[in-house]
Length: 301
Image 1 (cartoon, rainbow, N blue to C red):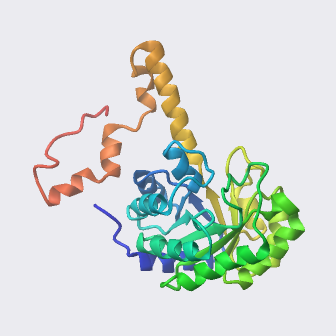
Image 2 (tube, rainbow, N blue to C red):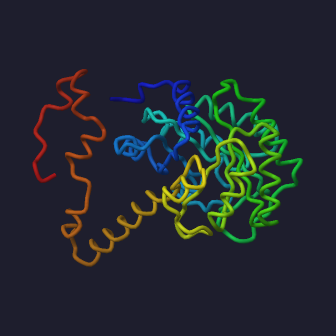
Image 3 (tube, helix red, strand yellow):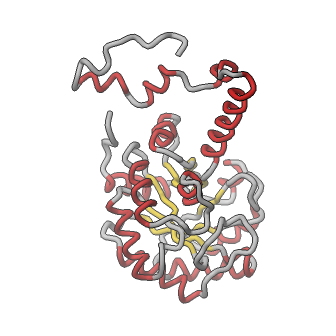
């Protein structure tokens, strides 16, 4: 009922534990607080919050238009709804070193377990689009040092994302990953790797956890959990999957209403009323007020 029973500090410790467990962790992307609760209920170990999803949900493209306040507020709403650790996409840190430092502290305050900060130039773009540009190595390292220095909780995870593979090739990505770890990164997110062999090259280069981004319609094939585990990947995210499937269903239902004059044909595909009430824990609120939940939910719904 209400929000998570676990504190942000406990969630950060949990994140560290599972990343050091030696087994691959799957973090689906939550597009809302309720979807985070569903992720937890289905037995996943953590939640990912995509910057693209936060931007798209506001009707914006993923080109750095969202602000720190918008991201921290929405990510905090999602994180507080689950006992799972949540990692958020902090783009480029919303500026340079001083902005990065503030971003980390705001995300700590919002209850996140960690964030990743990338090395693209501003304005950034989706990591699986062509035409990306990255900052020089000194600037990339400065962002990570600022993030690591700014955190108050040593268990808050600072992950460095590098997009240099698309700009300068795999060898450059390997060398940058090493430098980012030396600068204080707790984990590495090598974006837009083209093959399992490229992920393996990053895995062999650093001794911190690495992340694989299995986003649809991207540069990588959608590798399986077993394939990624086989080369030592620690964490795999599915950042936009739930938003895409939900919006696809919404579009189909709107088309049905326009064509049929009713949503009846789509009702069987919907989350039922009783299931929705179960997810929001409606009945538990009766502990506080017997007038809140004092009715029977119809069987069909």
